[in-house]
Amino acid sequence: MREETAAKPGDAFLKAVFLAICILAVTCCALGQNPGGPNPANTTDISTGIELARHENEISSARLEPVRRDQDPGVAVIFEGTGDLHYYASPKTAPAPGFELKIEAKSNDFDFGEAVFPKWEIITDPIGTKVEVYAGNFTVFVPVTAAKAQPEVAAIGDVEVKITGITCTSMLCLPPFEKTLQTRIDWSKRDSWKQVGLEVPTGEDTTTEVAKGPGYSTWFALTLAFLAGVILNIMPCVLPVIPLKVLSIFEQAKESKARCIALGLSFCLGILLFFASLAALNIILRLGYGTVFQWGDHFRNPAFLIGMALLLVVLALFMFGVFAFSPPSSIAGKAGPRKGLAGSVAMGFLAAILSTPCSFAILTAAFAWAQTQRLPLATIAIMLIGVGMAAPYAILTSIPSLLKYLPRAGRWTELFKQTMGFVLLIVAVWLLTALPEARGEAVLYFGVILAFCVWMWGGWVTLSTPAARKWIIRIIAVAIAVAAGFWLLPARVTNGVDWKEYDAALIDNALTEQRPVLLEFMADWCLTCKAVEKTVYARKDIAELIKRKDVLPIQGNTTLRGSPAAIDLKDVYKEPGVPVSILFLPERKEPVRLHGLLIADKLRELLEELPDKE
Image (cartoon, rainbow, N blue to C red; front, top):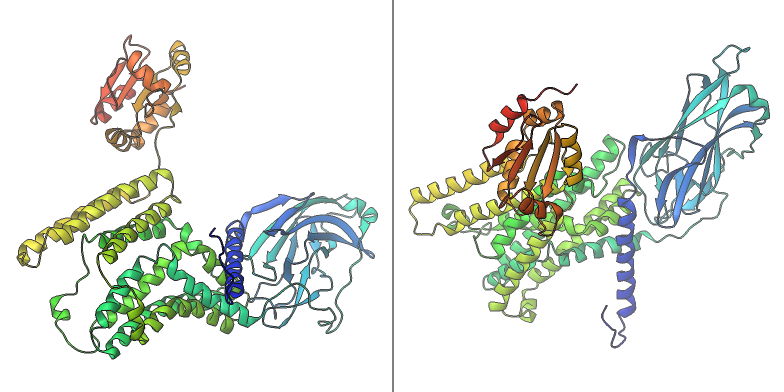
């Protein structure tokens, strides 16, 4: 961190804003660790309890226990937690329809009545509304109305209780959840079950409690949404776009003020259209499906990650000057005030899209807060993020006189632009780290091929290139990119071989037992080895033969010079390099050695000669 030199009047306010944004970033981490929504796997035989929600130091869990309430036997759902993490008691004040706490019990051995909830607490949400909630430690009683077994039979049966709802703190709401708890009760012992006291709400008792928990005003929250949008402009994914727009503003400043303003506001409109799309999606999900838009879900989609990474690669090439965006001459030659407006809108929309990979913390927290509010306020909050992102451009283009305070364009602008290209490449690689290793590697290879094709498209032709030659070159570039995409981008189902790590003793034991052994030597840096893996060992028929013939597959990774596999490759097997596959057969004194790429048919033939595993 930088050292402070002198206190200024605005420092306190800036520190407060910075602290608020840091809090939002921490919030994102908690959301990422709290996957919500229905999940049948969230089922447990409950005796010690199951965690329902957690955020930083706030936690809530639940457990089941057979109890009696006065003379009524039943099952108690005992919630234990901290005070600021709460559930909603009323559908009228829940963040969205169906998000109030619900408990349903079922069993093949018992019938149940409606769940009896305790008296709620009252809190005041950030917009000043009184809200009924359950928080901390409380109990919900589910009465057992009858045992399905005959009275003379002692019924010992399983009970399943489903809990659904949403948990919130005074700062944000976590994703909706569904949890299922299970326990077993002995109906014959119901008279000895523990008594539970339960204070239930009466009449319209909704305002008896004092507002609880910290909160902040709507204006403060909306101000943070605006500031979050402003901060998006300095994210690594968006920052490279800024010099492009600034350079454009420099050019437009030479022309009329009206056109400069029009182009700048068109760019802002593109940003706002993106956030308007998100606001519309939020409305559709909440009204049509009773759920919320969870920011970050799209990053769990491999197709989105791959698409964003490749887009960043293409934009990096643009930064390096490999190609340039140029409209067709038929369009570029048209005069009029609408010239370039559509492109400016598209650039603004693209800038907003690019903000998504690097702004996970800010946008997650902003959306989490917005989705705890009523739809009009939620929509305003989402749009304010877009307004904040667009504001610097709107100010700069509406007051062209501010341009004189910007540094003059020169060599530094080109160097800065190229530097930002490397930043985009770093972000692209970072996105691919979320993919499985094998698929991320394939996308990296495709990224290189795509870069070559983009270079062909923009670098192999000039303005003087004949149209026919220009079309041929660009068609070939597209064909190469499409072919490489079909080969490298689809997710490949691993039928492959279940390789064991290289172990000389394991090989010796298998040979002693007259078991066939397939030994493949490879290296991570060896492209031919990877081709063998794809064309030979990824084949379903060969993988099935290895398994059916009870062949022991051993893979020797010789990437490191001092590894046992690398040493034995040279000293024991006397092989000069990789790839090489060595098949030990019980009937042969010498193993069969397979070199190069075209070994699939020979290997298949040898494997088919072996007897099937008994």
